[in-house]
Length: 182
Length: 213
Image (tube, rainbow over all chains, first blue to last red; front, side):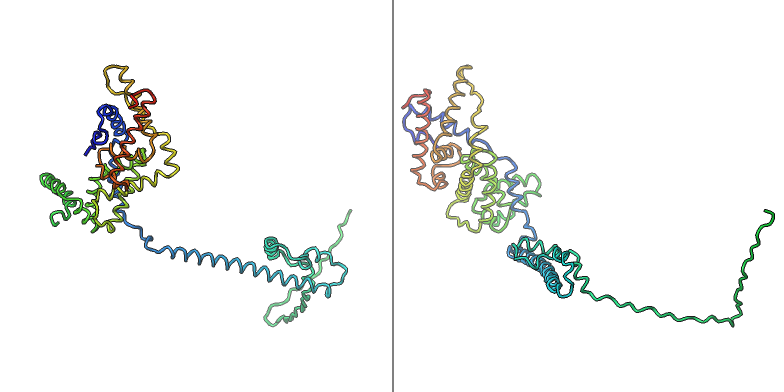
C-alpha cells in the first residue's frame, strides 16, 4: 500500500534525499493506537442512555419557568404585605395630628418620615418596606387604641356551714406575764 | 449473509478449534456485510470494523494533529460519530473512505482550536530521534542532525503540503484515498506531495545539507 516516491519525482539524483524526507515523514506518523481505543469505542456504543435523557429539553425549561414563577410570586406577596403595612402606617401617621395634641409630635415625625418625603429609588423603597414590615408600631398609633375598660370582678361570698359538726376553733389570746426578779 | 450473523458472539463461547475457524470466517466477512449488521444494532460487527480500521483512522488524525493523545481522541470520536450515523451511510463509497473522511474533518476541526495550536507549537516526541546507526559516530551525529532538520522543514510546510506528505507516507492510504479524504482531485494530491518534497529539499539546500537541485 506504500506509495512510490519515484512516481512523483522522476529524477534519480533527488531520490536519495526524497527517501530521507519520506522516512522522516513516515516516522512522524508512525505508531499504533493504544488498545484502549477499541474498548473505549465499544463501551461508548454499548452504554445505555440514561433514563432522564428521553425527557425533552422543554420539560426542564418548563420546570424552571414554573419555579421562577413561584419564587417571583412569593416575593411579590411579601412586598405586597409590607406595602399594605406601610400604607396602614402612613394613614395612621397622617391622621395623627387630629387626635394627638401638638405638644409632642417629635417621635412620630422621627419614626414615620416616609409619609412626608418624596418617592425614592426602587431599591431604597423596597428595603424600606422590609424594614417597615418588621419595626414595631410607633407610639402615636398606640394612643389611638381605646383603653380597655376593665370590669371589676364580682365575687360571691360562701356561707360557712356549721351544721356539719365541725366546731370552730376558738383561739384565746395569749397572756404574757412579765418576768419577775429582774 | 446468514454465515456472518452473530459471528462474534459465537466467538466468545466456542472452544479453541472453532475459534480459529471463526476467525477465518471473520476475515472473509466484508466491510459492507459488517456495516449491514452494525446498522441493525450489532455492536460486535461495529467492533470488528473498528479493529480493521483503527490504525488507518489513528494515523490520519496523527498526520493532522501530530499529538498522539489528540489523535486518539479524534479517532475515538470519529468511530462514535460513524456508529451514530450508520443509517445515513449510503454505501456510495467504502466504509474505510467514509470513516477516514469523518476522521479528517474532525481532526481539522480540532486543529483549528487554539489549545491544539499551542500544544503543537512545542512538539515533544517527533524531533528527538535516536541517532541512526551509521559507519561511525560522526556519521550517526550527522544523520541525526539531518533528520532533525528534515523534521523541522516538514513542520514549516504549509498545512496543505504537509498533510498530503504525511498522509502519503503513513503507509495506510493510496493517493486516491488521500484525494477523497482531503476533498481534492488526485492530481492535486500528487502535486502537493511533490511540492512538499521540493520545499523540504530547498530548505535543506539553504542549510547546506544537500544540493539545491
